[in-house]
Length: 171
Image 1 (tube, one colour):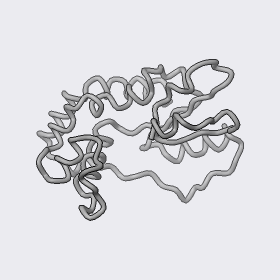
Image 2 (cartoon, helix red, strand yellow):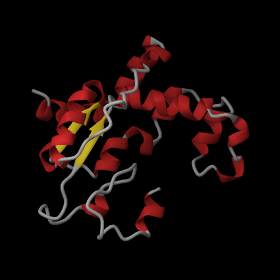
Image 3 (cartoon, helix red, strand yellow):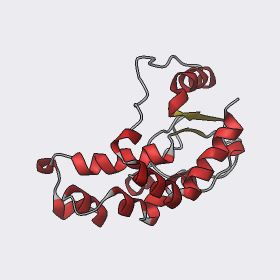
Image 4 (cartoon, one colour):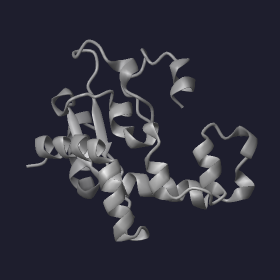
């Protein structure tokens, strides 16, 4: 998505959102205001893994899969612990947020405080937001305690980065 988005000119828009790295908007702090919603890194990676694993095979064109791990997961040839070891997976927040600091954002929300985030976003943008949207439920129950401990070790840097944001943004 980032490559496709890099071909677009967003200069005429007041609001840009989506799943792509933030670096194209780094620059004049008066020009851009950053908002992000973060999910616990363990929950995020579990969700990512099971999304790839449970995708209906008829919707997956194996020839077009960009990442080898997607194919291996969909064919049940890779477990979640090995998936977490991929560099792009292991440092997802650092990659997407380009190592921004918590203070670089005008608003940071967390999925376990989703209602609070929606209210703050509404106030910040001075618009109505669809409050019928809901946060996803946790997914940690889909892994064993041993896998969770392994993921905590592998994702240590991402967990610390996420926790820095929580300490800064949550009262």
